Length: 113
Length: 112
Image (cartoon, rainbow over all chains, first blue to last red):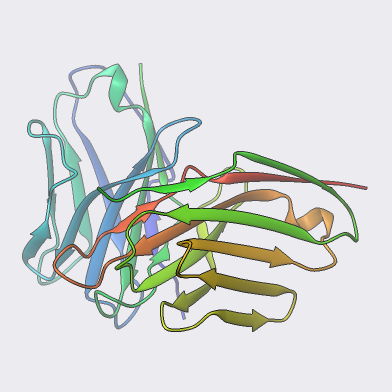
């Protein structure tokens, strides 16, 4: 069984550009979570989605960041007008139910020039 | 509020046991997890324990939960160099607030 797939693994953007990060959950999982990991820091929760619904976005910055998990296709984390401070590793996790273990992808490492 | 604390570093000799400790403040956490992260990689779920258990063993891994002290520990028997990684504990409250709360991770160095 394929695990959680994230792409791209590495993404380089210039300040002001848009970054789109993709996450395909494990087969059978309908719950998706996005986390951000800054250097030398732990993981910070960003958003929790189920198919077509945002359940909890309390960790998302108020501006420039958005997430979706459409009926078909991967979950997308979108960062508009990126700034240097957005440089981080972004991890996606999925689970088959909200209280079941979350399984992680290998992350997307975003670098802003 | 919710918080999870871990010591940042642990160094052990190959073959010894490692014990990584974690303290969580949310006593209503219902599930507690240990994840392993190797350099440049994602997080690998190692094991988890329900809050109504006090111990769980899985091969070389033993998880101990002291609910009264809100302390969680991960013991790795016969530690190998391949165990060198960062270990994160995380807790989840299965009530209204369902997101995982993470510690900063313990960096385990295994010396030959």
